[in-house]
Image (cartoon, rainbow, N blue to C red; front, side):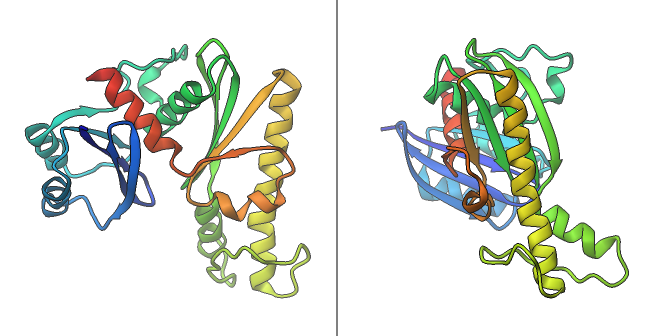
Amino acid sequence: MVTTLCFDFGNTRLKFAVFSGAELKEVHVLKDDQEDTIRYCLTKYHPGKTILSSVIDHEPVVESILAAESRFHKLNHHSRVPVTTPVGKPETIGADRLALVVAANHFYPESNNLVIGLGSAITFNYVNRFAQFTGGSISPGMEMRFKSLELFTDKLPLIGPHWNFPLIGYDTKTNIQSGVIFGMAKEIEGVIEAYEERYEKLNLLMSGGDAHYFMPFLKKKINLDPDLIFKGLYIISEFNQ
C-alpha cells in the first residue's frame, strides 16, 4: 500500500492526515511549518505521495521538501479535479473549499450537495448534481467572533466556547457564548433553509473542528465528517498523480 500524506494548512491550525492506500489512518496537528517539522513527518511515514492545501503564506521550503521526497502535488486552481468550477475567477477559490466539494461529490454523486465548513470562517459550498461547484458564501467563524467582541469593545472579555450554555445568558460569559454559538447555529439553519427553497433534495454535509458545538442546536439532518477535507485531498492527489 502506498502511503499518502495530505497536508492542510489553515488559518487556525496546520494539520496532516496519513492514508494507507485509500484508507485514512491518522490525523495530526503540526506545531509549525518549519523544515524540521516537515522532515520529521516524512521520516516517520515515508510517503510515496503528498499533497498540500494551504490558505496561508507558509514557509516556501515546505513545497521543495515535499517535492524532493515524494510525488508531490500542490492544490491550486490549475489542479485537475472531478468537478467543474464555473466561476469568474477560479484562482480565488480557497483550496480548502475545493477539497470539501470534491469529497462531497465523490461520496454523494449526482446529488445537490451543500457542504458547511466550520473553521476560521464558516463556508457554505454548493456543488450540484452535475458536479458543478458554483460557489457559496463566507462569514466569520466561531473563534473570530469571540475575539472580535474582545478586540472591538472596551470592557468585554475574551471568552472561549463551551458545549453547555443557557439560551438566556445570566452573566457576561454565558451571554457571549449564547450569542456566538447559538447565533451561529441559527445562521447555519437560515442559510440551509434558503438553499432548500431553491434546490430540491439537498444533501447536507458539515466538517471542521468546531462542528460539535453546533450540532445539538441544528434540527436538519446533516452528515457530519470532521475529516472530509482530508478525504477530498486524497481524491485530488490520486486524480493528479
